[in-house]
Length: 393
Image 1: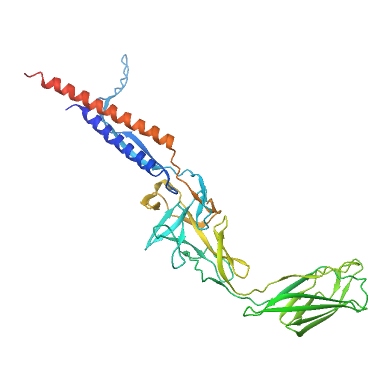
Image 2 (image 1 turned 45 degrees about the vertical axis):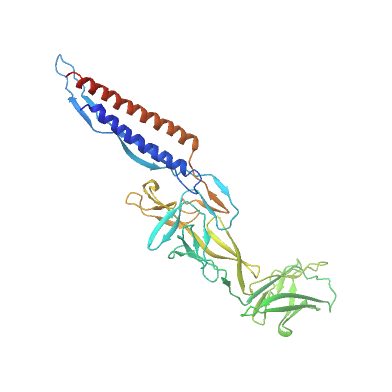
């Protein structure tokens, strides 16, 4: 049989595969985080008709004469070019700007994805649309996150609490007027908390004396401490009496000044808090889930983990916009967003498919014409065989 007949058949098969890949790309033009694939062809074995000959004296060398035996698909590669951003304004939607993959667990198997359309289930777990569990690091009670620790399934239940913390320190800042008359009293208050989160008032009374300013403190209506006197240097800086203990609270007065004509002393800070429940959250560029609690404070409640690969094109598509590792993808390099070459995270947005419709429709035409051309080779080869058969009548 004619070699061209089988070459044409191999061309039909190869271009059919190209058509399949292109059709799949177009079908996923609106799939979140989808990465388009490209078909690569290469020729098959070539039959040698004449071997190459070396040159001799008076005779030149000759090139080999070979006839190719067709084409085959060398590979189908994935294009990991960044897709465009689509704003959704949903707090659970995340987009990776740069390299990296979300880590998703299904049962005992680890998968990777660029699709950040997540949501919470009834248990407060951050999940993919088909139930995969998003991986990351949970925050400790004080909001600290150890990115060198083991990965866990991210959970954000509504019942998440920020525990109360007793006030151990308070700061007063501003100016005490050195030209105030003796006997002048300035009363200032700051809210403090006990270990159970109960709100109390810590009152400081600044009394002008001949030597300087005496300070007395009351907590919950009970005297808890005094310091005397606060004295200032000629340039207005504090000379003595910069701290005091007031019922378990260390009051910092070291930044007070003593200039004439100004009365600006006020409480500026205290380190206690009441208990609070989680109300909402936002995501930072480094993947930190920052919770907003009912006590008005914000605290980290978790952090999304990202993985990068030496050869991401070597990963295997597992369906559901997920990938799994192979022997040629390399091991995952896990870390936080924005570190180690990993991209940053954007909340309230999704990465769109990177399919270029204009290029895909062009590939459709190329695949169709390639298929047609190879079918003509088969038709022509058949006509030659028909002529050969007609020699015997």
